[in-house]
Length: 121
Ligand SMILES: [Mg+2]
Image (cartoon, rainbow, N blue to C red; front, side, top):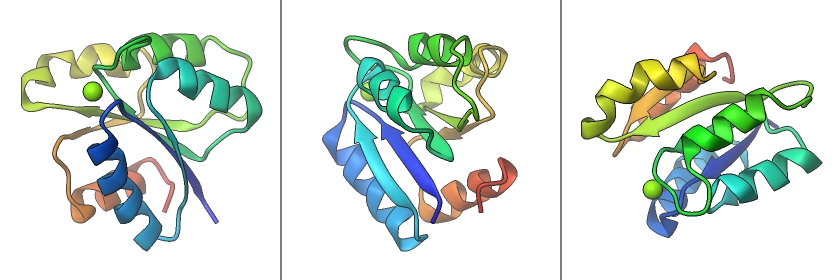
């Protein structure tokens, strides 16, 4: 079973994403900010991380930089979740080590396509 860590400060987004991923047979874990995500990744390596941009305590970008400069091995694939307004940030996210990005709100088909691109399904 593939594993996915959903990192988002919105409980609603986490719930929606969890539902989609569980119907795709993913083992799902959740974190509400980048700090919680780093703590999770210190314990275990998910196959893929769905990463929100704006979060309190530690943003998605700060998480990504910290995670990619860590000694974690193997590294999870990271899919950045951005809003329409965030499209200009996509290059920065890829430069910081994101493997893909998805626009919010996303549906099952879109997420499935992104998971295929990063090789997780
Ligand atoms: Mg957010």
